[in-house]
Length: 328
Image 1: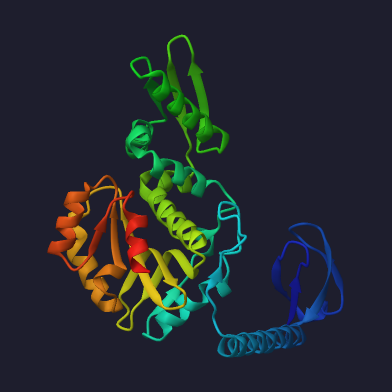
Image 2: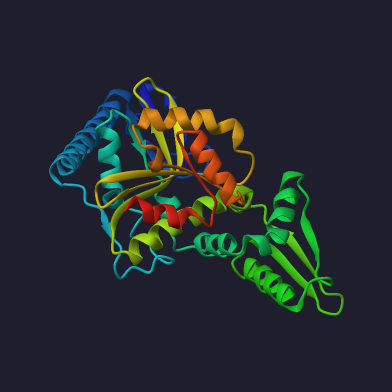
């Protein structure tokens, strides 16, 4: 038998043996191709396959050898523009975390994109986290509109003070400049703002609470840089335990190659998750101070009370840095 394969469109067909060695136009795209003996064609195909397989095995062996011999080192943040870098989004930077989980027989998969700050997620998250009480009148309507698939929101600033109105106007304009919303319209005379929301899943997840993860990550990085600490950090990482249980962690980092810290971020109801987090802390072998639940808007007195009740540390977005300072 003979085999016919078009090198242009991939059309494949089996032909009579007498056509071997002839050239025929592809019935699908008219491109001329040679007709080969089926055994010859399969033999050449297998030669290429096994050559590629051998090459892949060599590359994997080299990678495994490099991983085994090169010691993982925490990242030195000195001189890095934390709000515009991909230097943290590397295997090398995640190395100490990988080694820490590996030593506990836990599979770890890093999400490099989740710590790449060359976009604008980090800047907007820091602005929200630092001014949430003022900006929640924008964030919460966006979140609610996304939940019911509403195309946009309308803000009335007429009853706001001049300072508040300016803050909200500047923030909404920045959301438009950074493409977090697709349209921005400010009616100066009526003092109203209309925003058309983005359909992007990344942006929707951001407003739905992922912004607090970005905020926590940047708090850790800025704290580390300010205090000249070396650290390895990850966000949105996936774990597989030895019994195949799956878990995702919001933010995880190791200070100076030693103390690991986990931060779970909650912008909504957190109470049903307390037992889950307490169990996870024990499975990871972390001390109470090393497993932090950062709850948006949680009163400080309530945070202290919950920390006293449970083997977890509760903080709000404003108290996160203070707790990090206690860890060192």
